[in-house]
Structure formats: structure tokens, C-alpha cells
Image (cartoon, rainbow, N blue to C red; front, side):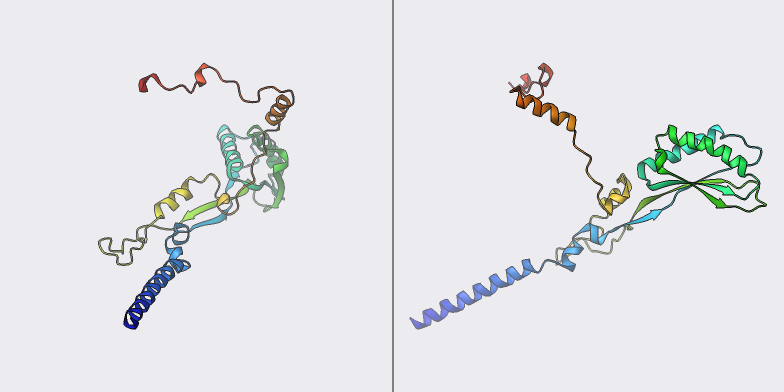
Length: 234
């Protein structure tokens, strides 16, 4: 009898040890091991600030923007509205022989920005010191934006035919990270998510008013919105 009890104790201890090892294996899957399976850690996307600029010439014999320059300013304004952060800075030369000409061209630039929908309070007009000998000192437009740069792919060092650890290959998730960096509307969202847009107060007010009057608050449906089963399946 005692011999049987000893055997049972040994079996129980062995089962407990096996269970403990299996739980330890699951519980230990964190830290570096988990990071190796997370594409955002293995293939991080670097987000850095960039300052695009547009230079508009202002020689002394110039009176207005050319058609090509007006299109360039419009495209620059569109880029600012899409990814710009902070003000759009327009720097005009000061102290150069073409200062008066630059101010005349500046009027056209201001109009072009306004036509493209850039708010007046979003534009920062500032002078910069130009050389007194530079009769062609330009007007410079600039703004701050964020650029996403993914890590490089192409590490084929792992032998896919044999992996005793059943781990993920070095390229795991790299393509997805590269696609995300290329497709994200504004890379600044990868740093800090933007605020939610406000709710539609007008629609909410209409629904509450119908509720108070005991009317149906659901949107009216017509024959085209029918959820009837298709005749094909009958």
C-alpha cells in the first residue's frame, strides 16, 4: 500500500512540474520575445519634421506672378492644407533693391493663398534681411510638416525550411509597415492621434424634437431600401 502511495506522489509531482513548466513558458512570452513578434517594434516607422519651401522670384522688372508661379503657389497651398502644421510663413526680402517689387508680388501671393482656402490668420508674413547688392532676392514660402520613413526590408537570413523555435522571420510585417508609412494621410497621426470631429448637433436636435413630440425618430425608408430576401434565393 505504501509503495502505491509513493508511486502516486511521484506521478503527482511530475504532473505538477510539467504543468508549471508549461505555464512558465506561456507567462514568459513577453519583453524581447513579444517585441520580436510585433512589426511596430521590429520594423519601426520614423516620423520626422520636414520644412518644404517654395521660392518665388522677384526681379525689379516684375509686376505680378506668372501663370506657372500662380499654379505653383496653389499647389503649395494645397500641400499645406493637407499636411501642414503651424503657420504658413511667407518671407519677403528687406534691404535689397527689389523690396518694392517683392511687396507688389506679395499681393498676388496673398490672393492665390486665399483662393486656395488658406485662412488669413494661418499665414505669417515676415521679412528677412537680404543683401543690398541682390536685386533678385526672392520671396520664400515655407511650412512645417511630418514625414514617415519606414525601415528597410529584405532580410532573408532565416532558413524557412527549419526553425526549431517556430519564430517569425526577420521580414515579418515589414511590407505592412512600409505600406502604412506610404499611405498614411498625415504622418503626424503616428505620433499623436488627431482630435475627433464634432458631432452633428443639427441632426441630434431634430431627433430629440421628434422624440419629444412622440414622432418616429428613425430615417424614413423607401422601396429602394427594402431588406426583403432576393428573389434569386427563393
